[in-house]
Length: 207
Image (cartoon, rainbow, N blue to C red):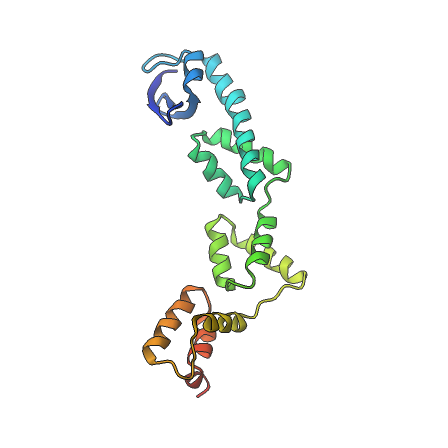
């Protein structure tokens, strides 16, 4: 197998491409250790050691270290490892490892996220945020069910009123332009149009 490209990844590491298909990152000292040079053949034994022993061990440790500081969804952890230059096969191995040890749990992550933001984000906004973190729809529904089973509930109108008070907004005296601005602000927060109209335009809502 032929080394088709070597490029600098950081000051101490290089990104190596083999046969224009396999890409991975090594320290420069490891590049020399395995005798990897551009446009030259790489020994199959060395490639196997890199892809099946060296990098999987490193990726597992990297994943573990990331999870020491905070929780990640599987997608977030995948993206972090991808940024580090690990090939997909190695990333898959690392994700399987931390998953088998229960270090990653997307359902647990979603439930904790809901708990942490139940008072400052609408349900729609929470779902948008979790979807962006790689949580799938069926898992979202399970997370809401688990949270509600613990007694969790949201009062979006109370949340909206708290935001209005914080902004110093009075729906009875606000000018039409100010109402429009507040309406747009609350819609961006993910609240439903009905709930926002009820708070921002109470007279029109109850006509």
